[in-house]
Image 1 (cartoon, rainbow, N blue to C red):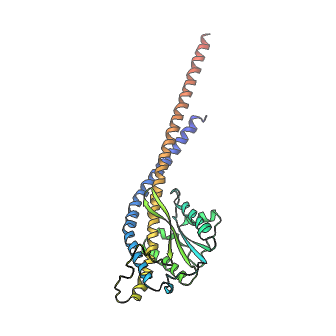
Image 2: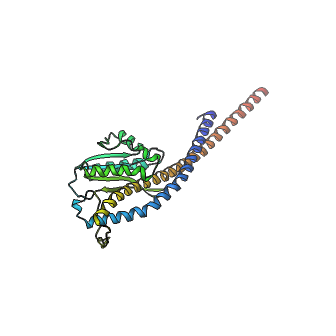
Image 3: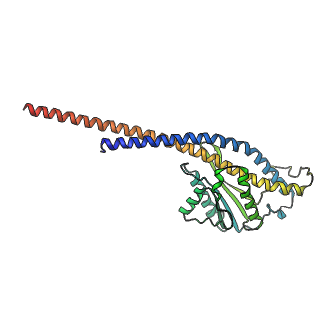
Length: 292
């Protein structure tokens, strides 16, 4: 049995940890509100723009479109979106697991490259001995999280579009956590390129548009903008999911620390009671010995 000093030291340590996790939970809760508002406001716009984009691509000769060309898939680029920091449960690990699943199952016969957005993706891939192998694509994308805004994300999307147009990659897949609520984040693989036309069953009015000034000019402007918005939406989803996951993880950690503190306090009280009882017995025994 540990002595009283050791138990007191552990109680102090657990109490300090509980204070830290509680503070981190409150910080994440504060950041989550802003991040949640950002993705909630962006999502309807991005989804409607994606719908219009799909309809436009369907109304054009998709085989000739720069960003909608369906060609034989040899090289696939997975864009793994994680955070720069940990302590958020399985938020980052789930992204890497999904990338591994895609590599082994869906794209087992293809050359798969991985572009990482977020420091944790690089760290986890290195720990699993998986090469990112992103070619000429930028490698300093950890800075995205320092200032999450459209101006920061747009150049990344443009780089991906240029790589696809140059046929460096035949398909680009975003792998990110889609924000549901503070406790639920859904790992989502989403095709960015080539642009997919809408399902005919979902939209029977694909060509019911009046184009002004003309279809070609609108498409030339709308498709790049829409693709940038889709990547930006994924970043916002991941940003909100990170804070939700961290808040939930820190809440659970605080609760666990509280339970551990209770157990240690009970253990300490029992040990202290046993020590006091032992001292009393020694005193009584000594007194009896003096009488005899």
